[in-house]
Length: 311
Ligand SMILES: C=Cc1c(C(=O)O)[nH]c(=O)[nH]c1=O
Image 1 (cartoon, rainbow, N blue to C red):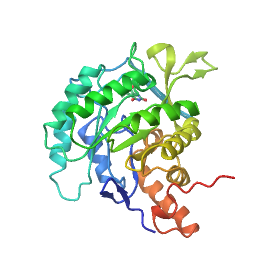
Image 2: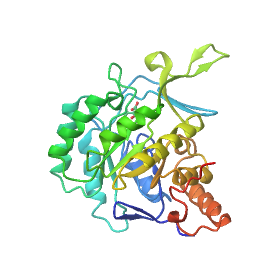
Image 3: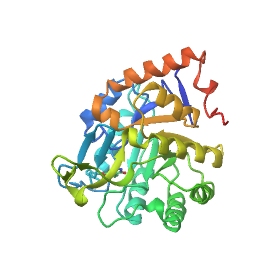
Image 4: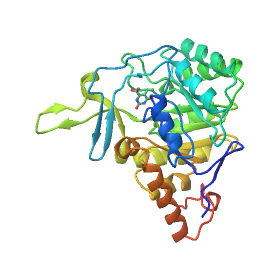
C-alpha cells in the first residue's frame, strides 16, 4: 500500500498533518511533528505580533471531542516564518504550511506582504474562520468581506495560498461560497475549522467547560465529523479542479481519514485527536489507513479519492 499524497505538484509521504492550533505553538512542538509519522505540518495561526490569547481554561478535551476558545494566542509571525525558513533548507523536510490570521483585513494583508517578500517556498494558509476573537465575526461568514479580502490578497501575494474556512450548513451557501472561491487562483481550501460557539455543560457542577465567552467555544472531534465530510464533499463537487482540498474535522481513526479522502480531500488534518494522543497518533492513523486500503485492495490514494458513491 502506497500512502504518498500529491498536492499541487508537491509530494508527501502520506496525507496526514496537524490542524493549525494543535501541537504547533512552539518550535519544540513543531519539531515533534516533523519527527512523527505526519506527512507535513502547519504552524499555529499567527498575528503580526505576539498575542496572549484568552484566559484559561480555554481548551477542554471531552468524551465526544473538544471545545476551545484559545483567542488566537501565538508567538507572532516572525517566530513562525523564521521556523519554516530555517526548516525548508534542511534535507528530508517536506513542504511546510504557514498559517496567518490577522484580527483585521489590514493585518492579514501586512502579514501576506511580509511572507511574499520572504524566501518561503511552502503553502500559506489564510485563516478566515477564527471563531474565538471576542467582537470579531468569522470573516468567511461575511461573503462580501471574503471577496474583498481575496481581491486584495491576490493583488499582493504571489506564492501558493490556501484559505481556512468555517463549516457551512446550507447548500445554497456552498453554491455562493464556491462561486466566490472559483474566481481566484487558490492553491487550496482547508475545510472545516471548528464548529463555532458550541456550549458544553457539565451537569454535576452545573457549569460551563471553558472560561472565555461564558463557555462558548469551537467544537472539534467526533461531534463534527459528518459536518466536515459534508463540507469537503460539497466543495469538491463545486470547486475548479485546480483548487485542492484539505479535509479537517473529526478524524479519530484510519477509517475517518479514508472517509475524508473518499469525500474528496487531498490531505487530511488532525486536531482534537492529536491533542488527546500526541504526535504518535500519526503512526496509528497511517497504519490504520493502510489497513483499510489493503482490506479493500486499494494500492494508492487515487484508487478511491473523491470516489464516494451515492445510493
Ligand atoms: C486562529 C484562531 C482559532 C482558534 C483560537 O485561537 O481560538 N480556535 C479555533 O478553533 N480555530 C481558530 O481558527
